Image 1 (cartoon, rainbow, N blue to C red):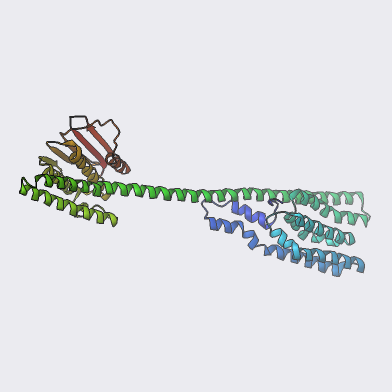
Image 2: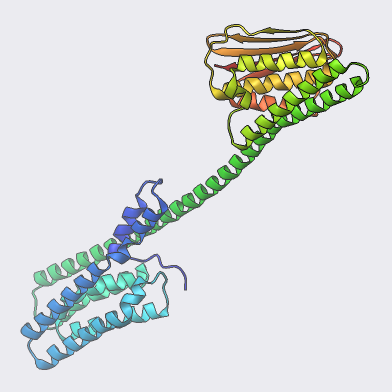
Length: 419
């Protein structure tokens, strides 16, 4: 019949403490705090047992009249038995039901009977009030509290003759007790409600973190796929393109110039071996094989010389100081950018000369690859994967890619990255 928000005593205090924990508290630890009142509920059992035992001893030894004493003890015994049989289970449950109302009404009725027989039974109020606030809604528990507190007073007043001052003092004390009990009950339940809201917010935070973790994982998977695609394009695909070009050149010269054929076949074999090494390095998630054997400047020179030999054109390399130590990811980006530029020259430019420059400054490294070939409209979006892939690589390490070209005017590709 709905979710119960009306708890008191240990549950409110512990949940209030749990609601005040930091937002970065681990979910398991947070759950441990919010459920702590159940683990420590035995303290309430101990309190109830002490109160019922103490009041029972008081009634058995101090209450005159056998009927009153036996009747009050029987009523309180029924209340204690009702708590042990059904009340405890209902209090630890997380929702209100009809049986909760029946239990609250029963212990209140047993209390009324006991107090009607002897006002000394009123001390059991220290156990009855927490039970009421734990069993029924706050408003109903507050009304029952007022009745429970005032009943022994009226029972005493009916059996004694008090002066006007004594009567006024007794009523004022009882009124303050009622107000205090009701205020404490409302305050504790308000704390419990706020703590429950904090618990829900923390649960939502935990769910949001799980969602963020899932999305981050998916983003990482997508980034890794993109990286692998760029690696394959920059290594294997370009190597296979070179092999095809060399094979076609050898085929065209097979009956004309055997020396040139052998030269082309030698380059083809070298390219195939490099491609095989690249594929092994890629599978093993290593840095490019060529960088494992040479610095980036030497690796670029080898790529440039291979292009010049393949196309039969002069090439110029200006590498500057080759002793600079660069981060591996910077070297990889420079190598891949140079490979992409040379691959595009091989496939599209038909140049008469190619120039490659590698310049170091205090904060950056500049790679420039220029040719005097066919050129293209640099303002038009690229349809292939090469340049966009290189642009993404360069951006990942905080660099810039610039392409200067126009039809018939050659092309210059510049990559500037931080050292």
